[in-house]
Image (cartoon, rainbow, N blue to C red; front, side, top):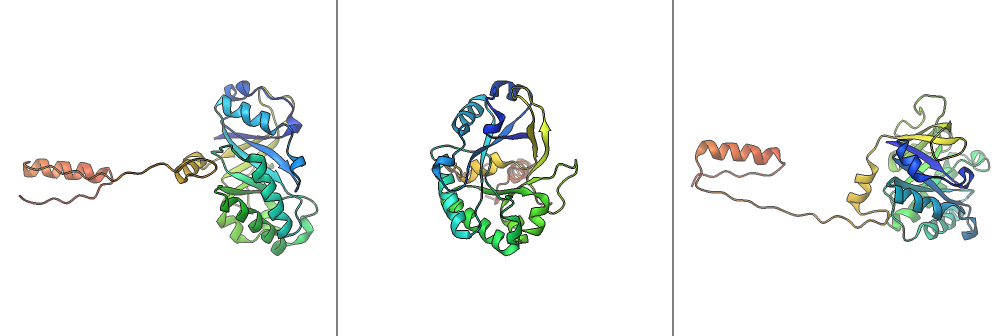
Length: 243
């Protein structure tokens, strides 16, 4: 899936042109920091426009947290910013700030888990964004296994430190119709819409499931065998009995 990520810095976007240019999804910055006033001023406009154009939509929050306690505050503000909306791509913690790099692996992992815990408790499919080397130097391996990963590596190669990535940000200088100037380009290799909608997360209701029980009698052995095989191919449990 071809994906872009945007913020107020991309200005006013013509989402119909973006869609026609082959872009299938977008991750929108909802804001940054721990104050409601730091909500991205273009978030509502970008969400409405991208959704109306039929794009898959996710969101992210840029973190400045240097403790787990601060991360929980930021996560709560993030939830307030995205309240009432649905997202069929993950909602992400963006952890990469220069104030966080010197903190080391344990503190950054604690920050991440604290932020993620707030999102997951609220029913969201949460993910982590950072540059590839940050995943290696500042985040424990458990983070890579536990959450959806959105990884930046723009050297035209796939991420090395976080090979479990679901979305790879591969360029900061892309060009897309409907957007003036450079735009971040991403490729998504996981079917997040199916995962999220199927689990009833990110504002979606979990789909109802049904049990189907079928029975047929009075058929020949050959036909019974054919029907049994066909049902098994559909994933059904089959019991064949002689009458």
